[in-house]
Length: 73
Image (cartoon, rainbow, N blue to C red; front, side, top):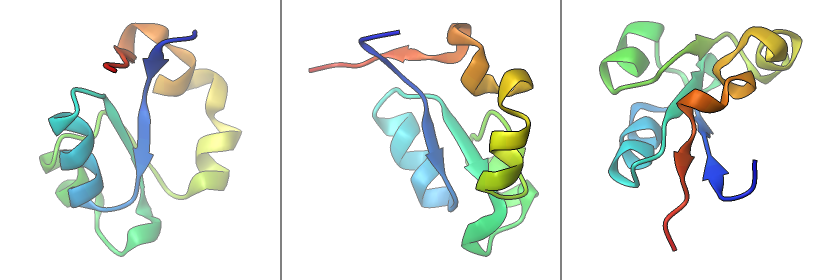
């Protein structure tokens, strides 16, 4: 939906930056950090890689707008 966002990153700093911007973060394991570190940083979900996220798109947080946050301008 226009005016809403969900962030995808691969490091704890990405997830923390998203939270700091009041945007929900989803993570992938391509950045060299484990699931525990990414979830501890606040990731809503963690996928193996972008291909895994794409394959599971319909069941991921990206498909559920209740997880999205309004974009602040």
